[in-house]
Image (cartoon, rainbow, N blue to C red; front, side, top):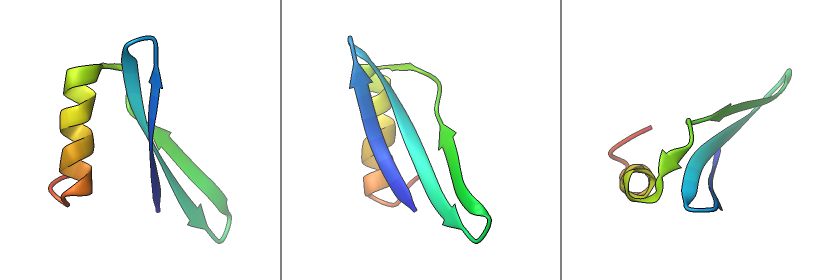
Length: 50
């Protein structure tokens, strides 16, 4: 499982990519304001969110 923090023009989204036998599964959050996205990102990194 790979998480990416994607930033552009003051907006942020988080992408999760999972490799499966049938191929890649990619999910993304909606575009978020930077402060909200960074809170979610920190929760992901600390294991408090998935």
